[in-house]
Image 1 (tube, one colour):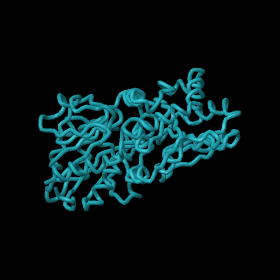
Image 2: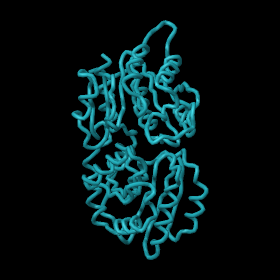
Image 3: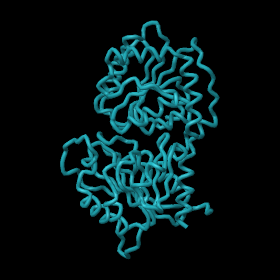
Image 4: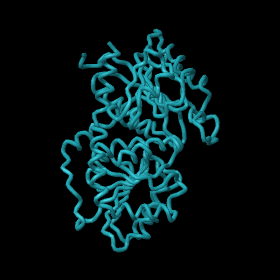
Length: 374
């Protein structure tokens, strides 16, 4: 097998927004950094959505071609509006950004977008030799050569009827595309059973945007029960979060020791220091598992429900809110305080989490790209 991708030319079509969140871009950045480290070249194509992460991508040293803002600001329960245009328009705009004067095709187009299906993918053959899909849903037909679904308990069988017969399927948490820092922190980690005398270290992290400010609602619930507890609470806000001022103001009046940070670049270190997390069952689930961090789960979107159920079945997390609206209810508060006092559950869940994901998924995906490239 070759050890370099020095000739690989890749286009990545991915978006972030307040509605879409940041997870798609973050995992694509991880893959792009792996390709670049092996000598390949990557260009991103992103639409100018409210809450985009285009500048973040550029800060990482990648070229980004920007598609026009969405035609409509309407928010839909489905995924069609996430594209910000019809698939035909999006495909044409993307092709205009990447088509070369000499008609040379890119080696791969990598697509991480719930609003793109086989129609867009088939059209991409005009400017790319091969098509790779990153998906979580298994809910639509694809015209691709390689598909990665990094979710827990995902089986290739769930995709076989909706991809071409010759499509290579990489499924399950062995292919979770996480930054190298998580595996490195796992190698350094020497977790022991939590010591009640030292206080419970709780990490609260709800992802990129948190448009409904669920973080503040969680802190409000915690404040109702913090008397007599020895809690150290670390609140991590995503780069897209617009509520930092209100969260910091509330945290400053809590009895517990509370820190609030935004857009941090040492999440692995923070996970390793925590005893338990309160978070969403999105792409950060696998980051937590790599470092053996149990989690109290708050489901923020329908596409997170399957992950939430799988994590609960595996014993690494407990769903304390089936939907965002449940946060702050009496039932939520009861579950929250119950599990924050269950040290034995945390210890058992931490051990289970470590078995689910080892943090080397991006290397496995890159190895397959190398194989298919040659």
